[in-house]
Length: 117
Image (cartoon, one colour):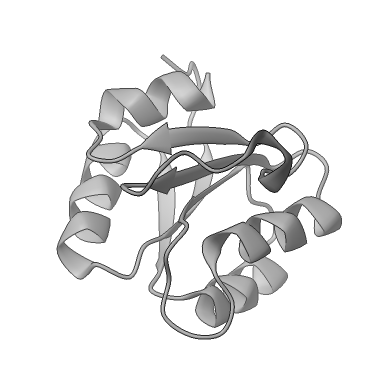
């Protein structure tokens, strides 16, 4: 669905889900960097030369959650696409950063591909 490879930061604390999504996105030709929590994701984002897409779960371990990460990434980058995912109820529209997209779990990699398009 996307024409060119994207640099994606995938943030998911469930290792199996993260590995499965990372493999599927890589198989589509994208470059994926994985993080298991918000602190790790912020460090990756800070040190990355570029990041086209952030895909983050909402419910994460630690004091900061996925929505806080999404807001911080939006503050640091206007161009980075932000996709927030969760198996919980849909967050309020105002909870997502400007331009952010919500995808409900369980999801297929095609759901993410559509959200990135």
